[in-house]
Structure formats: C-alpha cells, structure tokens
Length: 134
Image (cartoon, rainbow, N blue to C red; front, side, top):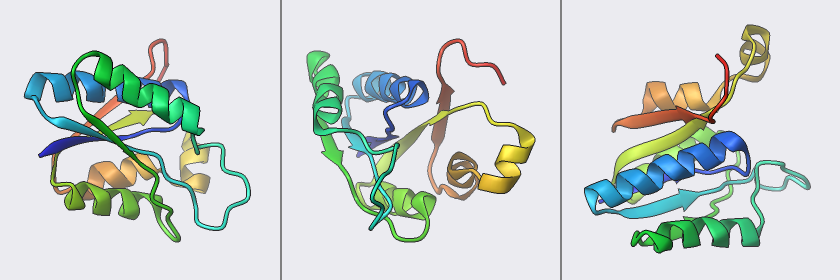
C-alpha cells in the first residue's frame, strides 16, 4: 500500500506534500506524488516542472520515504483520474491540499478537492497551506 498526494506547485500543494511525506513515514509506506495536466492543454499552471517534481521526491527521500512521481494526463475530469490512480496504486490514504475560494468561485469553477472528498472510496486527508484563511 502507499500514500498518494495530489501535488501542484502552490502553497496548498506544498502543504499536501509535507503531510503526505509525514504520513508515509509514520505508516512506513511508499509515497506516490501525482501531478496531472489536461491532455492537449498548451498551458496549465498546475503542472510542475521536472525540477520541482525531483525536489519533491528528494524531500521524501531525505527522511527515508520512497517516492514515485507520476504525471498522468486527464481528458475530462481531474478528480476521476486522480481517484483511478489511487485505486491502481492501492492507496491507503489520499492527501490533497485546499485553497481558499469564494462561494461564487466554487459555483462557477467547481471543486476538484470537493469531488475527491465526496467520491473517494478510501480515507482522505485535506490540508491547507499555513496562514490560509477559510
């Protein structure tokens, strides 16, 4: 079994990574770092560079956690793709980061985090970046 982390290069993504590493160390499990981009998108601010992803894996290795980074593309729904990966790797825990959004923003844009929380068939740890207000 492993811990799966939804990682984006943001403060919320860093908070999720930190929590995921801590949980993997505590449970003596491997870590799977997932950073996904919409298939065919020319620009996607949620896609981490190779350097950022390598640094994330090094953070885990520095504390004795084996980490694998995957970047599966998604076509229709990021949350569904992420949950599919969680099932494929038999994740014992899903870790995601949350960011502050207004009610209007949630209504217009939807919420991948909310969808993951509601549809996951395994435990989910949702964390926010330090200093974030909700």
